[in-house]
Length: 531
Image 1 (tube, rainbow, N blue to C red):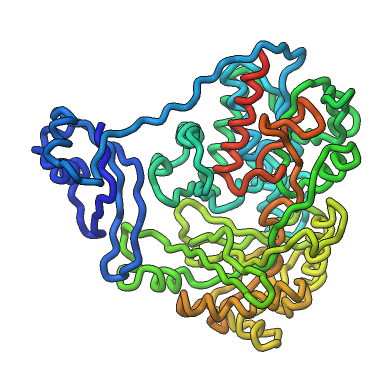
Image 2: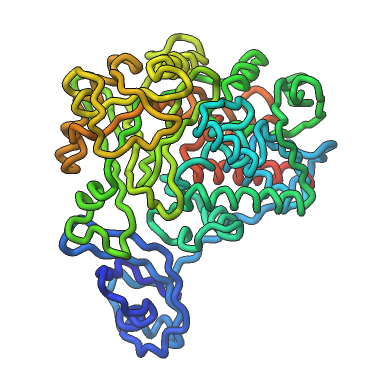
């Protein structure tokens, strides 16, 4: 097949892609037999001339050499160099018990599915509940403020990503990325995730997807247990030999993949006591900010805002504070979404962002966070967890209890005032917000950096620092505060058979990178052990 790159298509051009491909290759339309969209990006740099930019793979009835000879020198047309993933060869070591997968977030699900497809019959342990029950538990928490430590936005089937925008963008380049996308589409994700530049599936689709992946694992011989928290690990001579579940059930195993997510603080503490090697790592904390989605659309798309082909606009903002060396940046931006209560411990307020696939709430929200270094938190490996807890508990107190969140308008924040309710949009966070001073619930270096960043962001997106934009605290779970150290084969640095994976282990930063990490760790196991 031939690949066409940099094919620019204006918003109002409705010509069929096959016809465009034929025109670009200087072929009659009937000569184009197949067109596959490899990538579709949006170029909105010139607001009066927004274009989609396509990469297409084209199969034609005309020999490729003949087409290339006619288009000699055209750098945007070439024969596709197909990438083939390394074939998997089973290892020869014997397992006397099925591999165990701990956690059913993206890393755990892809690891378990990969192992199940190759005949390993994994045992999958999830400390929370199944996604349907979990969805009801979370809805009740948002409605009433009745917190459930077992089932919440952080813990349960699908992991924290289940209550998110479901973005699948990643900076990771991996030849097996298409395998993850294929799994997601088979499980119910929209097909365009295979080629969209900024794909997302939405929390509504994610809930269906994780159920379907779970069902596949079970049909292939795997076992799934909910409300099954690993409370101890057992080793002998530096090797894993078993796990304790819920303090009373022992499971013998030589291989376990640890995909616990970035909020399993009790599990980190247990692993630290057991001597599993880990280190403190940077993370970030800050707030969520909300604007009318229309404001963001107009800033990003100009007169084309509202065009049926564009959808809701997003943004990515970065500010470097040179005097202090701190950086403020947007994180997990959710077009047409909601700010949600994401606590995983009692007496603490945590915020996150979430969108449905339609992104139709009319509100744009994003985290605005500032980098935190291990030295900011203390000398202990787990000091970052304590740092996060401190500000989550301050936020709970400032909110007045009941998991209400502290909120402040940008105008009040920049002018050292509090109490205004003149919001551009009604805050979406439930169980509700309490106007207060966010300087009281965040470190000084965070509020200082955000105050310097907001005017800069306003220059980039007009209206971003509008006095009525609402900021809601606190966002503390951008990433894990620790990294569980591992070798190149994914095994723990000091415990053989133990495989730390995904965001919780400190090796991923989103759904796609976590899923890829879980898949590749499973392949490492397959290469070492027989089914």
